[in-house]
Image (cartoon, rainbow, N blue to C red):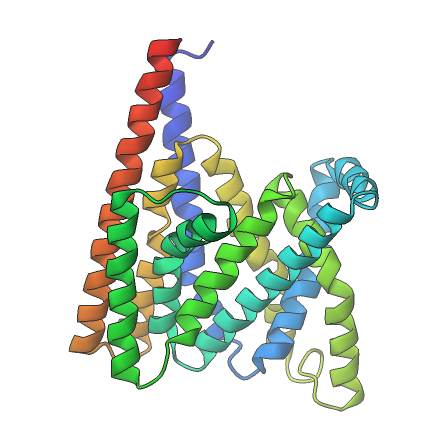
Length: 311
């Protein structure tokens, strides 16, 4: 058994790994901004294609490729898992596209909003799809978040589809992932494997039309497009390494690092507007997240105490 000091050290390293993964996700817009001269659809195709090959090499290096191959064979026999894999691949590709497009069209503030409300959207999806029950705190949180979205809708004169699109696509992605219980590194490889052929076909099509940037603009652009595979995978690998060492409620708190950094980048580094209306809308949503996170933390602690008593 591990001593108290060992458990604390493991939890501390888990916090560092998880926080670092969210830090990387939070500053990822800088990377896509370096590629704002490339159309978002081509960035997405390259991101999928090179992520797949990066993950294949990674699995070979850490000697998990046989496990990956075994998983593929097993999925071929289960239509439900194949459907879940295809759905997860489609949803994460959609999420990546919306995010890249939002960043490169100077809408990072709205993109950050999407990842703030994502946990609440996930709860709502659980209620409607998995028949889970909402607690009073979750109901209050959802009402406050909805009020924030309505404030922005009234301000924009349009529905904030970027924020909602990011939150819903990632929430549905999480549901699809529940049906594919695999390690995150194998999961990402499977998902990009499903989309990689379509990404390659699209890149070939762009090349045939003379509209491709890869290998046609500059060496810097080529390296940025190719390295997008590693940039996509590395934060996920750190997250997987950290999340398994810390309680779920702590992961919940740390996840707000990413949208907060994205919001700061959008407003203070890229000059996106943050008006009084934005402040009011975000105040509603931050209040919702505070209530949601605190209630979840208390619930987890109560459950842990109950389990300790039973033991």
